[in-house]
Length: 353
Image (tube, rainbow, N blue to C red):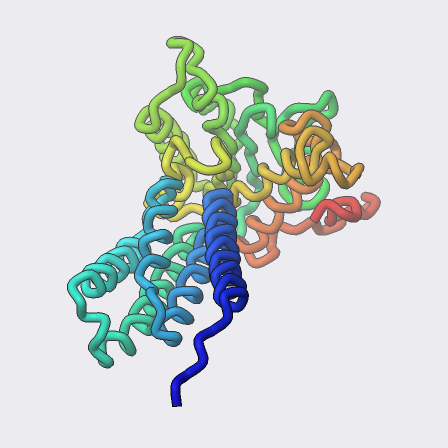
């Protein structure tokens, strides 16, 4: 029997439905790309996992899948993040998979079945190397009779009562020295090395590099990445010469592209440092009255001007530094009450975590 041809109205409805599906997929793709470009460095590993999950699902459904890998690689290159060894390994695996797909190997069952497991093995290597790059690989001995030095710009000492070091002093058993100075660059911070040496630090917390990106005091222009790296390495070497461990704060310099290409993460990886991700400092902007979502929430805020921490922001920074110190020393630097002294608060006010 002859099949009955679809009615014109039915064909038109199917055409509209197919068009709506295509538009929906394009919008979803655009949303995924924008969200990925806005992902903070600390979330790159999990953002990558989402793209690889979409790729794996497309392979299982026998749909076109390699473009998921191409989009992920383009996002990684665009964002200019630090490249640990695991990321190089993963990128090589992605390039090999995409090349094989372009050459027509995708039709072979063995190749199609082995690609997703290989990509996930590369992702695991990337995740492990990223985690290791931000944490000290050893446990230092408990310091005796020494101090914690905090060296930074206005994020370290902004308010009239000081910055987060004054809050941190109430959380740890060692004295905390605030060597912060508003507007200071990494080059200008080199002049504070004698003060750092005199403080006999057990730990040096470094928060520098933001003002280098804004301008250089002598040349009235942005300092180069290489110059900032040299300055920070000089400070790190000076701290290590004194037998001090270094906690490095990652400073954000852009929401999509990092003009210094993951400088702090590279330093933490190369010099075995403890890293505080830039997620903490970014929260001062996100939870302030000048930018969403903070401006939509109506407070309480971590920053009053969208950049510098208020008292709640200082409490958050101090808590993040305390977390890094507890990880380094297994809690041995946490505050211990002394005779005749009233107990002090170890945790920040409610709601700043």
